Length: 82
Image (tube, rainbow, N blue to C red):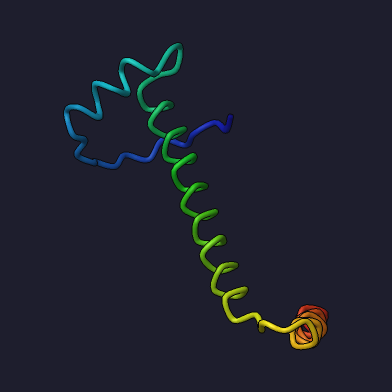
């Protein structure tokens, strides 16, 4: 786990959320637990965005085998340019 640089910020937390953090923090401080949960949530959000992007990409994939093969080849050429 990273060592946090203390930057003072003020956020409002719902009392129920704060109670759940206190119950689930274990040996961590509440701040460390919140930071860990935020990292996990941000990673989940990033992955969901990637899944959405992939779904959008493959949604446009042609139906027939010849069209799919042409699409695949064009995609590989496009990726090679990037």
